[in-house]
Structures are given as structure tokens and as C-alpha cells.
Length: 440
Image (cartoon, rainbow, N blue to C red; front, side):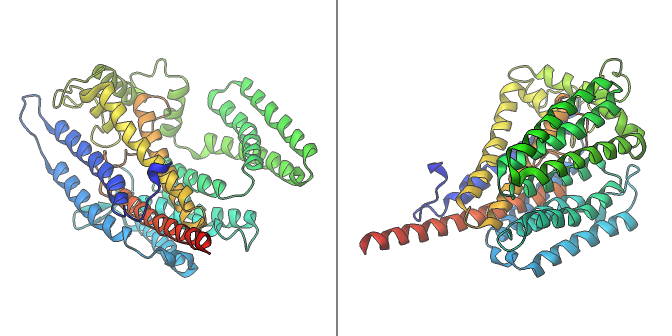
């Protein structure tokens, strides 16, 4: 991790190590968008979406610089977080009540011809208030803070779900969970509790989805682990009981959601993942076309502008949700691995930055939250494109066309740049203290 330790003589390093990969991703995204506009005749088609994406990148870059110089000490004050929370909540309410219906959903506020998606803002807001709350463990019970952060997240999840956008609602909930979970003490105990809840609740949900009662056997290791935890450690007894009860209640609740609250097309997507055979002509069409596009790219791809799936409109949403398939078709396995390596580098940089500011719990959890957000977005999008997970409508950051996710991604990395500078200052202070101790 020495390559991430920012010494006093290299204060310019964070912007190079963060901003350059971001610009590279943005360039690859714009390049792919240009390629998707090339007509079968070889001429360029409508470039409006390309011009908009360039504008979003420029705006994002300006905001990045602003966020990288912001005084993050204000985040310690609950008033600042409350203002951000209320602002985001109002945006989501306005979207649900007054946003125009586009493609049968109400997800975007249209201002000056530009669509703003408040749910993208909500994901970052969840990271901020969860990080601030869980950093107060020294003063309040951590489980109370965990529950409070959950209560504050629920309005966001419900409002996003009602747009409707179940995928984004679930992603927002997952981001909250991982940030809050990683903010708790005793990771071994917490991991065991998570496994207990996951096994018990998962047995109910998977049985409901597949109709196969054998999934109930997944409950057995969860119960065994709960019994082991109950008798192995006195301080874990109550948590083991709570985890078992929560697992049962969550399992029943998710089964109810599957049977009554989820829409038919949402259930079809998940069922198509578990039983893909015989679904090539309906709900599985999008993923099948995406896999064909990726597979046809082979090792080195067909070359820029030579993709056929997107050019002939076989690949749906080839500029947004399935942008990875469009890219992989033209740049192949080598290009895809290069793209994923850039994302991996940025995620690792966020995590190492969190380690470097571990003495500041708020900043450390924000960095972890941004890493989790990017990881989930990349995993879900590429997983959807390759058919590894059920189809969802989550865009690929800086690659997919879209102003909200592009600008919010720049904001996130502006925060990471800022936190990196805090790490530099903390390293300077530690070095100075060590020198003073040595001299004395």
C-alpha cells in the first residue's frame, strides 16, 4: 500500500491517480457512444446523445474540482447532513408527484431539457448520513445508530420503488446496508449474524421464486450457526436470537413481496435468470442479445464502429443499460479486461484511502461507501450484461449515457480526492510528531 501513501512532496498525486482514470473511463464511454451512432452505411447518425454526454463530463469535472477543495469538517455537524437529507427527500417527493411520465415511469425531473434523476443523488446522500451516524459509536449505542440509519433510509427506498424503480430501490438499500454493516464493531460477530439472517431468509425467498421446497434446507446451516453462537459466547446470546427471528420475519416478508408486491415483469426477470431455458423470445431476449454481442467480440473485438448488434438494433438500450455489451463487441475480451481493471483500480483506491484516514471514522466510512457504490453498480451492470444476475436497469458509471450518474460519480470521486488530501495532512502530522519525539 506504499504506492497510496501520499508524501508531502507529492501533493499533486491524488488528482493524477483519481482524475486520470476517471477521464479515461469517460473517454471510453464517449467513444463507445459515438460508435453506437454509426449507421450500417458507415456514416454518423444523430450525435445529440454524444454531445450531451460530453457536456455532462465537463460539468462533472468542474464539480469534481469544487468537491475536492470543500471543507469536509462541516459533515461532522448534524445540521449539514439534515439539510442534505431534506433536500434529497424533497426532490424524490417532487419527482413522484410532478415529474413527467417517461416510458411509463416517473424517475426524472426535466429542467431546461436536461433530465435529473434524484435517485442517483439519494444513493450518495445515504452514504453521507450513514457514515456520519455510524461514526458516533463512541457516544451512542452502535445498534441504535444502525437502526436510526435504517429508518432514515426507508423513505428513500419507498419513494424510489414507487416511481417505480425496484432495482434502484434495492441498490440504495444495499449501499446503506454495507456502509452501516462495515461501520459496526466486531466484524466476526457481525458476519456470523449476517450468515444466519441470510440463510434463513434466503431459504424462504428462493423457495418462493423457484417453487422448489429443497431450498428450505438452506435454513439448516443458519439454525446450526445460531445455536453455536448462542452457547459459545454470552454476549452473543441475544444477538443470535434476534438474528434468527429477523431471518424468519425477513424470509416471510420477502416471500410476501415476491407473491404480491413485485410486478409481473420484475418476477419474470428473476425467473428468467433461474430458468433461462425457453425464454429466448420473451423476457430473456435482452440478456440473450447482450451475451451474443459480448461473445461475438471474441479476444480482440470487431473494431471501432464494426459492432453489428447495436447498429442493427438487436441489442436494446445499447447506449445505457447494455453499454458494456456494445463496448465488448467492438473491443473484445482484452478491452473488457482493461475496462474492468480501471474500475478495480478506482475501487481499491477508495478502499486504501479509507484505510489511510481510519483515524477519522466519518471520512473513512464515506470512502468505503463510495467504493461499495461503485462496486455494486459495476457488478450489477456487467452481471446483467453477461447474464450472471437477473436483468436490472442499473447503468455503468461513466460509460452509460446519462447526466445524473455521470455528475454524481464525479462528485463521489471529488470527495475521494478531498479525503486523500486529508490523508496527506494526517500523514504529515504523524511524521512531524514522530520527528519531534525522536528529537526530544
